Length: 505
Image (cartoon, rainbow, N blue to C red):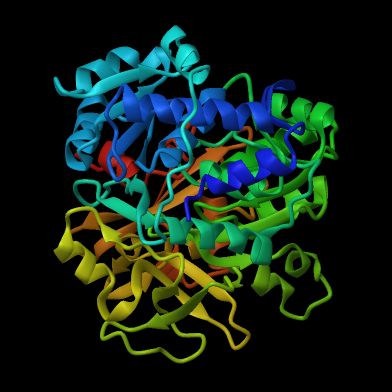
């Protein structure tokens, strides 16, 4: 089943419903959107010689044509290769070469970088150009009848531990992920709107399928990105807005609403993921915006679908373990199994730490052209996430950190998130990230990078805060204040970048 059959279905059932908006302006209804996608698919097939199974890359910031490109690629039976638009041309060139992409769809502002990255035989299409619009008004093609095991989405990992790897997600994976949205995250009604403020090349773009299925609206902000004031205005004008955001984005949105005296009443749901949402930040967000939040935990290898912390669980403030639960990432999605295991893949006892393993319908088929990496990551039939966590007796998973982020100081493991949670209790600490720094005596020492609300906090004050909450050996040895924490395009804090820029000479 081709995942773009969801678009065809809604075009048949709800042809006159508004489908694609740029800001508050409606561009296309579902009938028009499906017709444009089918015509663009025909252009890819006939004019660009894209055959079923071929790869077509999208290297673009968010824009109205992104959704069209994504579904035109699906529609003709090809494989979508979404590329982080902040990558350097050399990094883009690697993805294009490794995936063997025949065509690259790009936005006008990235055209020069795209040309620089492309080999002689690759076709470049500029989204929204005269050529694009002419193709969108051409003769449509019938929807390609894809098999469930056909690869539909080739997502390249961030490459923090080497060259990026292409994660192969099949038609079955994407459909299972879509259905899991309804069972574990949220329901979607006809009047709802998904706003793409986070990059569509990542998790935000994957949530289009659930909203397509229900004939809901798809909104691309005029800025093409995350602007808290713009989002608050769109929520007020459009209403019933759903946003997928990294925790850092939620923090900025809540801060804006506090300054502006707003409550975010035009937002329906905010799904947060991609990093830890600290307890104090979550409490503040719910105080300002109410119970609009759902947390998901996933990876590119099991997109958006490892665990979820549902709205009703976040609302259950009278539960005796509510504080523990909101510090967790929730329970396993209905479509997967989750377990925590030791180095020999044996289950650890309840409450003990180990690596998070996942098995189910959303787990990738493997890594593109990397059988050894696939075998290692999927050994024993389970996805080995590299994340460290623990399961409680009720099945709630609490993450500590990526295994590579654990700090080993004097032979003891220190989990950065535990220290970060404490430091965020201080009212003048806006953001924090804790890393390990090499030390001749201890192996590693704990270093905290912080962003202040107002003046930086004296070290002694932070020391006292830590010593009142955690063991002395976990206390940071150094506090370093920054104007902002370095983040990637998806809002994730770049710990390795902090280590590189701020390591002692």
